[in-house]
Image (cartoon, rainbow, N blue to C red; front, side):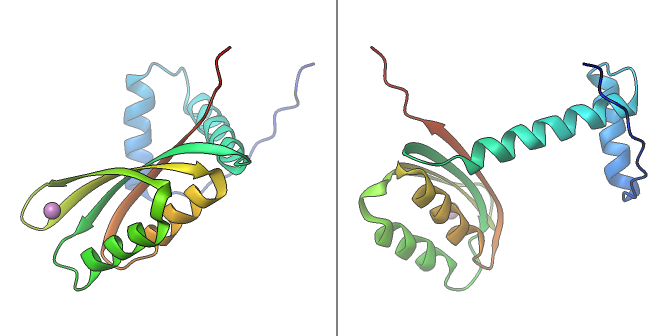
Length: 140
Ligand code: NI
């Protein structure tokens, strides 16, 4: 069934619109509207997928933070020790003088994995956190 198309007006900062325009041109979208529809669909899929966290999941947290932020490194280590056995492994890369990149692999109840990422995200000096969650698919 054909969906009715609604028109909306959106206010955006210029640099966001410029970047978006550049990307949709590169990806070959025929119009900006088509690019925006696709971006919203991706957002909805991602949100629904991230909200369904019943059961065991593997989560990968990718995080960039300032190593100069007082107490931050200790707080991140404390959180990982608190989480105990759901922290599977971590990888630390000294990106430059000020920034560290950390990749943490967790395995446990989906909601706990998400909560762990949110705890780290809330710390001052954490610049960027991305959480990817994969479900444990049993193969028979
Ligand atoms: Ni470092």
